[in-house]
View (cartoon, rainbow over the protein chains, first blue to last red):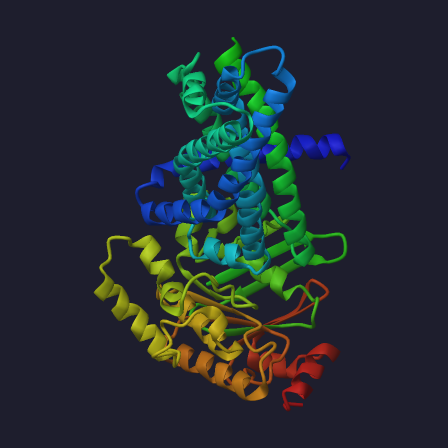
Length: 250
Length: 243
């Protein structure tokens, strides 16, 4: 099978997989304990790394904007630009990329290990649908938890930028807060959160797909994990473009 | 009753080629063959995990590959399976592993009722007191017994054991063989053991199926197998000390 055929076949398989995931949403209440468990697990895995990366991202953003715009705009607008960019773009995408690096690799490695050790076949034989038992709870958990993670990420970026603005850019706390409020619209927050839900859904669905369809052997676990991280990261960027156009630029 | 009709599944380097078999209800059947003969592939085909290119797999008269997914799940609810590498869920303890097939199908079942069922199966497999342990805290023999307890917990009609003694030391292997025999005597359900080592099972088995290079060499009662004129069959009988 050449690359084009392989791409078409895999795309078709992923579409069918997504439809099966949607179908399994009927069993959400039956699996609520698993959903809660995965919400905690996903948060634990990603929250520290997101906060840490976001703080520095905020610091860099403030520095860059101040450096690029120092003779163009008043410094008051540093926080305006940071806040707008964070809510619409940087917050959701940092969360999405962080998700694809940390959560996606974890899920894919776990499910592919289960696959190569026959645990998924064992579930099938026990009449337990792996989509219903392994995939759906993770997807729902991701959809429910990612808006909160995005808000934490956004807050961390803005806070990082605030620290640098106040400490190194001669911007007073009041100036920063006033600047942040300029051009602020609630829709920007919701738009960013809608994007992050999409990132969470596709990242987890793709990592589950690559995990659950892994072939046999230790190499297959590595391949599934690498594929899921790579494809999820690319998917996040593509989805970001599509949803930014749909939500903010149309 | 398990019936295979002309089951064929081709891979680039191996496969099954026109497998026919009839394994009667409530009998103890042993499927033997060398490593790579196609035994595990045959098992996966019987379980509905690998669809054959042609032929039928009939469980109590129903072709599992012509059944819809829901019907297949119903058929599978008759199965209890011990996988070669046990396939226990390593994120769960013994109790959770053994109870999973019941607790998932009957979420309304209370803890006491579930505990009663699981405790009975743990007692049958000599695992009383191990219910809180995690899979990685257990020896190979204990893991095998946990997997057997899980296979038994739904009171299945057909029990499949894939290479139940492979990788175990002789003493532990003898213990597992005795456990499988005792369980069959006790519950009298169809038991299908897939193994390359027939020694422990030859005296107990009712039916033998011998496969080699993906083809059925023999399938029938043990008595006929003892008289079967084939080099491979004789090699197995010699290994079991019956020639």
